[in-house]
Length: 78
Image 1 (cartoon, helix red, strand yellow):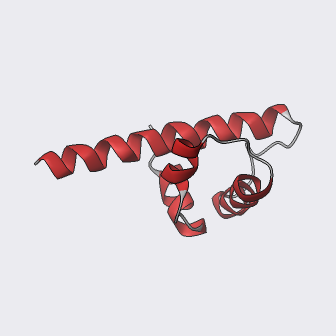
Image 2: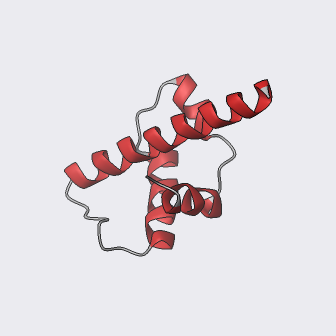
């Protein structure tokens, strides 16, 4: 039960961080709104690896995510 709550907390933090990164990308002029989920996920992976200024906690939260993981996170947004 405790593990489930911790997993849910991690998932929620990842979702919020992904939303934040999408907002950053959108502010820089790259519009992802109408892009396919796969394109958004691919772009975000590159952004995370090369451009995003993330603290150690945020970077650890996203560590190990692949394109498909990000697609899933994007698809289950509220």
